[in-house]
Image (tube, rainbow, N blue to C red):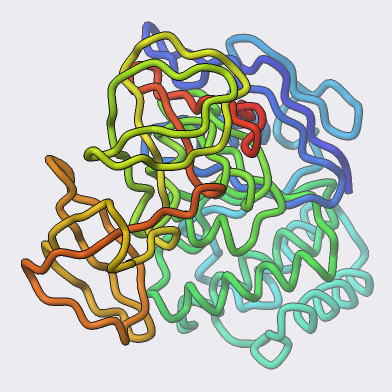
Length: 365
């Protein structure tokens, strides 16, 4: 396997900028998820790494070699598509072995490698079955097998679980991560599903409008979002934003929300008077009858062990994730406390996170 290095990558289609000045490194054996909404540039980035699209500018290095303008067939990568792209007139064995057959590998070696790959994916019992009659999960395993059997330098996957139903998708998320742990393949995985990215990836690049807004571990992008977009895109429900006016000075650790003082991490930088927002995850809000910050229960969503309670706080509605044992009534007044160390601060105009003692830099990609 090999390191993938992307430097100042840009792709335009006429006047439209699909990818703008993207740069990141996927270490040897690492699993990177390109995460973002439809149209953000993640698939275009993947296709440029694969050689299916040529960049307008920038460089792509694979295992130290500049492959920016190499053809896809010369890059030693394997691409797994969303729609499987299997040969319906072949059985499973022939589908998996076809790349080796095209390379002129000896029949005995093809047989050995196909059977090894099938055992790895736990589909050795269906090698002689037609792919046209397989369930979605097994068809995806065959597509993965066809990629793995080549033993390429890296794997590129474009929303490979997008067509599966929820049950199969959950199974395949677990199996893909277990497979990665076994073969230590350098992998770039495109998805719009945050749960897939958080469950599988070692690193996540969150993309928006052609740019990487944050690059980091799942814990970093979730707990220390670099922008309001990242904070809003990750999490279900997403982070709450509570706007407030006023300047904050370096070392300041208190803001006023709805007339109540809220402790926040101390700033690393002075902030001139501007529109700011306090960011707080639903799971970092607690109900406390003695708390001076008060709100009115607007609604509740029961989720089994927890519930999502919507609370009117001045002109805003925020959501708290609390135990389902906590009884709430629509319209009742509740006291709220926030876990100060878990709070984030953002500039509303730019959307960027403000550097604090606990959150450090904004961690842009």
